[in-house]
Amino acid sequence: MLVFVCLFLLHPARAGNATEDVTRTRGAAASDVRGAPQSAVKDTGDGGSGSPVVWDDPYPPAPAENDPAFEGTNWHPGPLVDGERLDYLVRAPVGDTSSMPLIVIGGGIDTNLNRHTELYDKALVLYIGPGSLTPSSGDAHNAWLLQKIRSIRGPRCSPTCPPWMFVPASAIRDVLEDFARHVRFAHNRVRMFGNNLARYDIYRALDPALQPYFSGVTHAIYAEWQHATCADAPLPTATPPRIYFSWGKCDQSFCPTIECMDTLKSKGYSIDPSSQGDTTLADCPCPEDGSRSHLLPSGRKVSEATYQWLLSNIRK
Image (cartoon, rainbow, N blue to C red; front, side):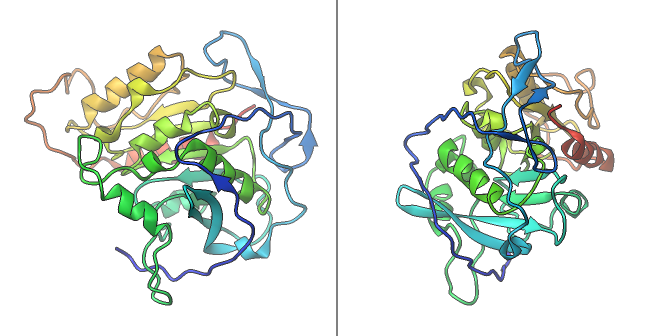
């Protein structure tokens, strides 16, 4: 695991509970992409209803200026989950970030936030997951979470469990709100980037408590399909996020990806025109016969298309 030198910056933590996700309804003032109050933003999605709906910004009011403690790449304390503190990692540039999108990551153990720099350099990035060991203290951020993802074996935990399996929606919501009190960003441009050990994160981001917080959710290339819980995903709320899928070549991930996409579409989610990857159903029929490679590298166009969608998706 990569070693990451971090700075603990203490501010009040909020409580969460891994056994109970609490859905809260708010009438808080909305913010536009520069953080200024406005009444509401009309969502481009229809939640499966067939007519436009109005999205009320669930985030707390933006600060007048960014907290200097959040500049750069640093860990910050978040809420408690079953008595354990959930830290979160932020990558934020210096200067005005009011109109920048926020990319939220929960998998891939990308604790240096350097695996997708082409994307990260154009957005604010927030990582909620297990961290690497720090040489100064010998402790790992979210060490309790690291232990949990390694403690269970089964179809959805191969080779390890997805981290957000143990992080409730209420805790993720509290992290997003805590971040919003310290950093200005476009509240209607918040995306969950599902990559690597992140298929479960897509399911978690579709929790009714979190749907208003995300404008978009991506199933990106190499999101581990064995963690999928698409069949268990809840129905869309009044203002659900839009969903984007990408895939690579004809490997073992292709058919589960198509199945997940079709399942969510049947539930009423809006699936944006997705990256066509490097193969099609005609060339890679489903179900497969079990002879395909586990993963095959994808072409650069797949990543570029995914990044473009993450940076452009917006609630209007």
